[in-house]
Image 1 (spheres, rainbow, N blue to C red):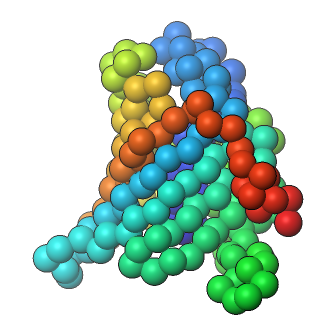
Image 2: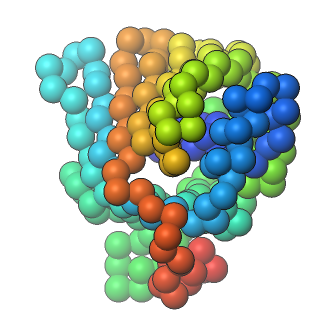
Amino acid sequence: MNRLLTVLAATVLIALSPLTHAFELQQLSEQLAKPTTIHGSFIQEKHLRALPQPLTSKGNFVLARDLGLLWLLDTPLKQDYRITAAGIARRENDENGGWQMIPNKSAGAEQNRLFLAVLQGDSSGLQRDFELSLSGDAQAWKLALVPRSLMLKQVFTQINIDGGALVQRIELLETQGDSTILKMLDSTAEKPLTDAERSDFAQ
């Protein structure tokens, strides 16, 4: 989960930060900055060297630029996560259905710090931790992120993000040879937050 936050941090930070040193990055920044809310579904495939088939999970997500992220797993198990400026919380699977904060770990806390920098519009985090390489155009672009910080180099060799109007695919290449592919499906910026989603962010 925490590794996914790194990718989301990098993706959204592009949308929030004025990367004016290259026209292409600035164009992508303006394009991704337009939506205030994004709804969609996802398929996540975890490819492990020791297994012939990937571990697959599916669910839905809600990204609210000013509030955070709801990451709602449906399979293989049902579990809801919320990432906000306060940290990561998990919905309790009981009759109350309340949210319980997850304690930060060392590496996870650093990755959460990067995500918080995104929510606060702090461009220094991404520029310090990644080298960026963008290709394509507004309709079909590819962004490669090569870790610069020692902490991220210990986990990833490279992160690749593909998209058009919105992010469509994220690939995480890990130093140990494993990889994760995240496909963002049916993403739309046309739907506002529901009352239930606003309540989840407010709790």
